[in-house]
Image 1 (cartoon, one colour):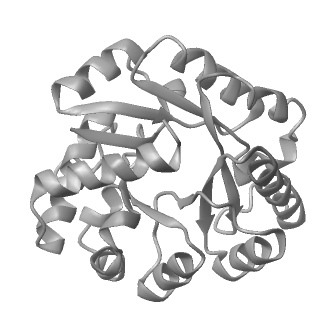
Image 2 (image 1 turned 180 degrees about the vertical axis):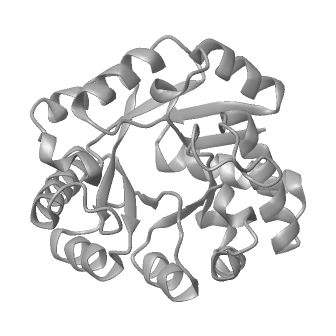
Length: 247
């Protein structure tokens, strides 16, 4: 069975109950729905509380950093919430000013450290600043770089900091040579899989709305790439997610 450790059930057009059932039928029996704003995180926590197989995060995405973090800390007390994030830096779109992104990222690192919670990181075209802030604030003991898009050097830098790497459907894209090289060198006990649905559907579904059920496609692709049995990768990535989120 697979664990989709990063999806956005609150923004999918599909009814969440249908998405959860569809995933279960495809062998995906656990999901983590991720918050991007304080309001979205509250919706994620509410949604997760209605399913035995769904958990939530509470965080502010770098795109939404200008919207603030008021009320975020309180959401971490919700029983279904098991991580802080997604947090980080995104210099590709710069939808929030970079200094505000950095401040909001630092705040969420602090929350994860204070609460002993996992930290979910989004970073795009901001590796140096991401590592500098993490090093200054202290990397939480349980940290995952979601939708990892770096190459071998970035993978090594993440792994040296004790983090796990989560791979999405991007690894199946024809242009993802460096990313596949990173996936091959990631130790099995640091490897996780995700869909980031409704975004980033894997080949051969690219361009269609993504869904948690498709995490099995990502996992099976990684297994073939690494030369590992699919059931071993399913078991390991699920165990890694369970441990990271302390489920």
